[in-house]
Length: 411
Image (tube, rainbow, N blue to C red):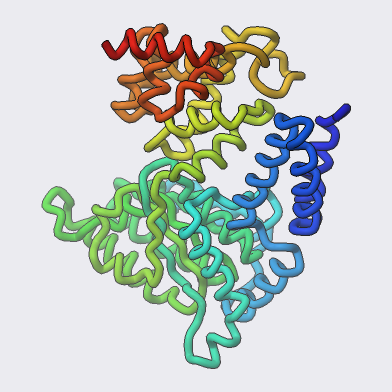
């Protein structure tokens, strides 16, 4: 089909605007093209797959978001927070204790989560749509939520997304920035922060939560931190029912047990599974468009990586293409790796380079396979579970050539 790139772009726009109705027609086009142009059909298939994954936790439509925001405002007490509202500051230094992110001031794409977790988070938002029904039963939507997990998995992004979907300003404070060497100042800063948040209808987001909410029985901590934790607990109790509070930490094991009990919801965000990695990688790879087999290789190689790790790896891969790509791969006007034989070899070389330059990104078995000699790339593909036909397609070799190389390597 001529001008297929335009058709693909229009299809993407149609899915975003019309959802299921557009998807049905694009599926018909994909099935028709499968007989005459399998490569174009595969691209439409990938577009439909990405759409399905995005719909797992898609941003609310404007009308739904407005209804949710109205429900949140009815449930929460306080004044409206505006751009001109004075922020709380550290009395000793004059430094603001928080910043405010207003709805609509930044793009709020939904975080990419494993499917069951995305569905659970969607239910958290739906609770606000059902606030009146909950109230009739003597209940309220979740008001306090602790988000924890390893670095780079999207904890901060999830907190900001929740605030955006609720249509509320996000009062964001890094608790490590509230600490002070002056006796009593840290506790005073906590009090000032909560007093500000309690005054307005907003989401209070406490990042780096473990910086203050540490266990009070830690022998390494002095009495001051114990007083600070007590102040934090009292502030959380006083805020209950007044406003929505989110907290995030990389070190949940450090938290005081009484702090855990203050949160109705405790969301653990794990590192992305294979479908989530595929989704994230496709986002970061834009404008490159890898084939199905190349994506399988990339998803296999990135086992155990966080979203931030994936973004770093893709950025490094793009730099590799600019330096070493062939057949115009580095040309920003092109989409997709170089066509023709061995384009998978370029990907393998890029992964191999990063296995040397950024070893800790990779799990040990993946890195061990990648840093072997270049001639053993077909062995890497065997370890990754590719058939001889698939390995040949990636390396630009015939199936017979791959078979001979594997026999030599294995013995």
